[in-house]
Image: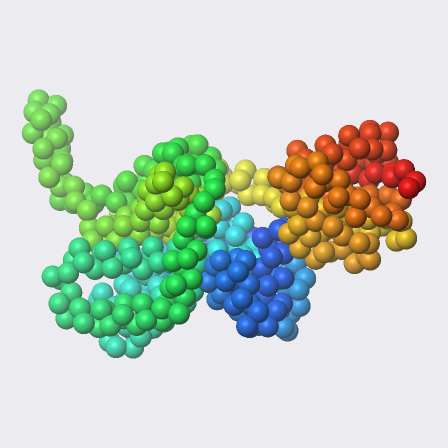
Length: 495
């Protein structure tokens, strides 16, 4: 492909991806996880570290970046999410560079196109969390890793940049450790081919390890409490993850799986025609021409390591180590897309196959559209903005009180709520009748009305049924439903 045309197509892809990530950026409410990130990032540097240690139990880099980002831009929805949007847009460019490095510019362009229209990636590019940054740093890490593997191009500065990228990566999310480990595994696999850079590579890994030492005791201490809870994932969980990568459509999942296999295996030198008279000989000849290139093995290790290893750890019953979920595997997404892109590019090797190549791209875009339409049309995040505004507009300052089930749900509520009503939080599992009575008595003292706020995971909390039994259905003045949130206003009897 000509350089000018490639540049133009890449700019168009980045423009489309940028518009998809900027569009409706502030339309939905800040949800719980985002509100917690904002709350912590508003604190000073020392307090951010303390919150990461005692509360979030995640490395602090994203919180630091969000802290300094909010200083000039503020804490509005668009402001706090724009950092992730920018990371997402930059990722489209870097995945192109990796596709070019591993294969060619066609694969780079197709990879960037797949990432640009990915509903999964767009979702986390519009969320004030660490996942978009995690994916960007993953791409940067692999881009530099490939650089250092090229002996002709490798120099000490590349290893320094590579080490810095990996340090930033593991200080963004603990899954960054899986990424670095996958690179080490690939390097060991081709140990004899990289004699000239072994020492520099080991120094880079040593520097990464030393830089992580201050956080290592915390990581070891967190590994058990972080992993508890949740259901043990099955094989269908991996299939569900790949389906999300593929845009949420079963047909696209099958298509991407086929194209990924086509991109994984290379078929070269197959000149003889199929012989129906000697099918076994033809099959033998065909199989002998199938190979897996080193670039494809790198992508396979990259993708599989981020999915399979967390899945295997989550199978440990004695520790209940359920660390696997799709959003944490987001770093595997680029490898999956580059493999698929390599498979699609095989249809460009002959001019007669170009119509099929165009048809595949149009089909992928067409089948991705329902996922994008659903994302932009339906609520994805709890409507804390609408719930808080409703309470603020319909409350009475001198007579109302608020009870929020799950105390930390105050964080997203108070991100929007500007009123002065007293607020009380209670755990969703508190069921002792005496404890509930004491809690409610303290909350409603000298108050005439009570607002109960229930998030989606607390609809059947004991506090809900306790209030119904204590005051009766007739005491309910109104019930208001928002997406993932319920408001119930009780009229309290006079003391």
